[in-house]
Image 1: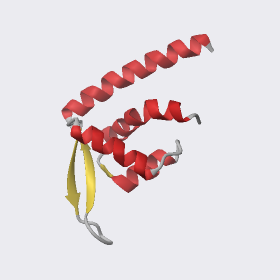
Image 2 (image 1 turned 90 degrees about the horizontal axis):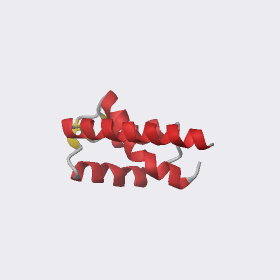
Image 3 (image 1 turned 90 degrees about the vertical axis):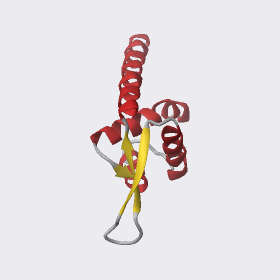
Length: 100
């Protein structure tokens, strides 16, 4: 898949996955990588930016094996942003499909 396509939609994919429930970084990387090829480094940069913009919060949760894991939780502001971005994305895809 073209890198520019992914770049434009990865942030929305992260927010959409977190609307389903909190996840830790590696788990989120695995979930998204099952559909789109993405590196952990790329995903962590997106997570940091979303957290800096207050769309996400984090918390530590003990792991049954190993150190505590940092979980990501979407905020109410993040949910609103995700809804707006999803509507824009779907409108874009609809218009692009007409041209294709």
